[in-house]
Amino acid sequence: MPFSSRFLLRFGWLLPLLGAFAPLAPRPDFAGLYRPGPRLEVDTRREGDSLRLYLRLPAPARLGPGHPLRVTAWPGYEARQALWQDSIPRHRQRPRPEADGSVRLSFCLAADRVPAGTVLQVHTGTPDAKDNYQEPTTTAWLRLTPAHLARSFVLADSTGRPLLRRYVRTGELFGIDSYGLYQPVRWARYAVVPLAALPPMTGRAAIVGGPRMLPVLDSATARPGEAFRFAEPGLCALRVGGLAGVAPRTLAVLVAENNYPTLTTAAELIEPLRYLTTSQERQRLTDAPDPKRAVDRFWLDIAQGNQTLGKDLIRRYYDRVTTANQLFAAHKAGWLTDRGLLYVVLGPPPSVRRLYNGEERWFYSEGGVNGGPVTYTFRPRPSTFAPDYYELVRRPEYELLWYAAVEKWRTPSTALTGPNVPGAR
View 1 (tube, helix red, strand yellow):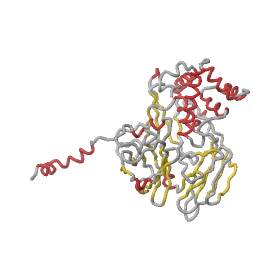
View 2 (cartoon, one colour):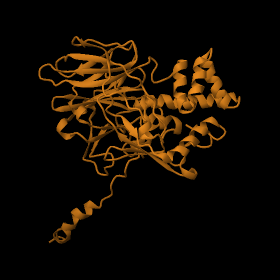
View 3 (cartoon, one colour):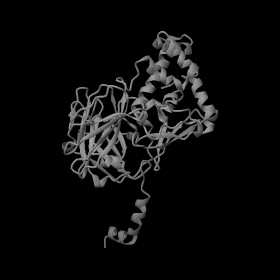
View 4 (cartoon, helix red, strand yellow):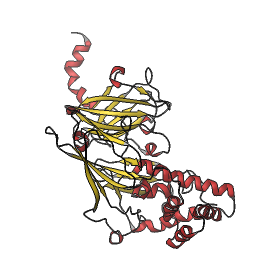
């Protein structure tokens, strides 16, 4: 008997155990996905027994040899072994180049391969790229909820292309792209007061919750295929379905100012300063004869007359507000959310973990006691209007840390000492 056969007969029982100790994928760090800049955008639509994924690769989009499109399914964000991985061949991608150099793709997966709770990683970079799961231009992560697997429509722009976002701008024309028959759409516009997030040491008793029932300002039923345009900012709910046995599904849409996610008006520039200022300071800015110039003067005074430093502080702060708007838009602008609060004041987290229970933890190497590390935990608080909303776990011990972080913005001589401290990008 050959040696290989004798070896298998005697030691073959060890092979499964050896496989159990094979190297596992490291737990991913998602901090890279919170860097400012362009990113791979994704949305989904249920189509019969399939789930269609829509992607938009930012310019310069690279596909083809050396840059395959791959999908990996994980049982959870902290999983170290994938359920499966597939490469999507070119003929299934339906690539559509855009004038700006980006590329749109779409492809289908069998719905029975992606049950609720599955985490999909879509990647277009080179297979051997280090830390590719952190590169926002080539990688997107999506945890599939029951809503993802049931919703048979997507928001589309005026030309019929998927919007790939959950907000529209005032005056923007958009529509509903349903799979199969046109479905009736009933929309309702709600009166909401977008409350800003409170500091991380705020006690629960001091947090004012929103009303259990939002008052409806107006509502109507749209004709099949009819486009929508809302003139006022606010929150709209689109209820789609009900025809030919299709169960109605609700999708909330934030109607933002027409320059969102950027800020342009004086009022828009003053509001995010609430994280650094008192209400009296903001009122003085609002009441100034020229509020926009007053905002410039506010930053110039902080910079002690140094125009270069003042301009740099303005750029850094409002760049963070814009990025928070892109990343965390929910039932309100992204900078108003709990994650937006920390992002604007503390900056992009150097390390991020997403746990099996849905929590997200942000680790900062500086900013803790005696300048040491500090961790902030966010817990998912999904609702009909904000299915991807996270709430910060507030703690009294954050108080001194928070005031120190704000003070670094108010005293810029110490705000620019390193990449991971407030005031640095």
